[in-house]
Length: 464
Ligand code: GLU
Image (cartoon, rainbow, N blue to C red; front, side, top):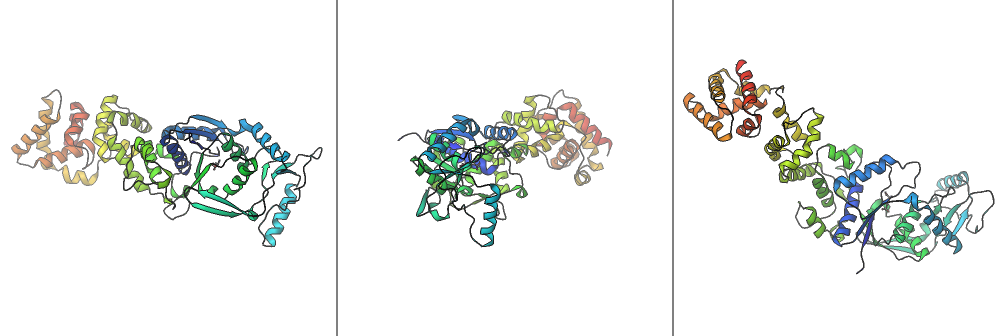
């Protein structure tokens, strides 16, 4: 079998949307699964809306997700000559014509059709125009067949039929020489040898027009697969009002790229009951057959759950690196990366995002935290003063602290003072962290270090 060639073809008019990212992922996964090629093509022929910032944002998003491309980025603006040649070929073969209708004229006809409750459609006025009118720049229109049906064999939707009578004589090159989407996409997909076009099903109505163009050129059709849109909880198409839709916003909210990848792939594709996949497994197991026909509903709780899974699986040293920028945002500087990795280890089990982790880590760095009032009232009572002082005395007599000896100290004090080990542990916990819930208290003390523990304890005792 010959090599499969897939592409992701974003228009650089904004950030990388999570819907776009899922489309990119499906293409990328199929290419990797089949040992094929994945091309990144930037569809930047919309001069008004395309921006350099958006191109950078798309590349940044792809890179963050780990989606590498074998070719590109290919910019459509570098291929203007190819579009012109193709348009000229259709003109030569009498499959396209020059159109001199003015925007005003077209608008007027459109309005009239709407008034008369007809579907607006170009009336074919210039269909016979095969020569240029000196001094005027025409658009070039495709002479679309008006009869019969166009059949789209879609790998996800099944067969979809369109009446050719419904289809317009599409402008392929505007009067300023710029190609339109349906035209440039066909020229590119055909000349790049794209074998599978996987894209959002918001494009499904464009596809019959594209098929007609393939036919006109005599190019073989690629396989088409239109992926259902991602919806919000209210079943409306996912948009800003449902929350963040930009891939990089998820990075800023403390998600790991593997978790977002896993989440997005599963949102539309399934493999039995399995929820968690390594990238390697995704590549091995991905196929279009298991992409569902119905739209996936974006579920932030599930994403949080998955992110928690990935955070728990990750090496503390790696997480420490990832956590660093989130700490910096709060002005927190670790004593060393090794120290930070120890902190991470104590928080991995309980954090769903890196933002949450950075928040929870705060007490390790600073002692000016707000003490939880309820916890203070419950655990830091005058009766605990003596046991705490005793503990402080023990600590002062050692140079360093380790979990084992700390536990011994607690046990000994609890026995001597006839109190529960839990009472002294909770009192120390609130004194050191400001909260009644924290990672294991012995670990916390080891990480804070003897001097810091002494300082915080002393302060708490003074208040009793
Ligand atoms: N530039 C188009 C878009 O971003 C590409 C659609 C396609 O994949 O053909 O929607």
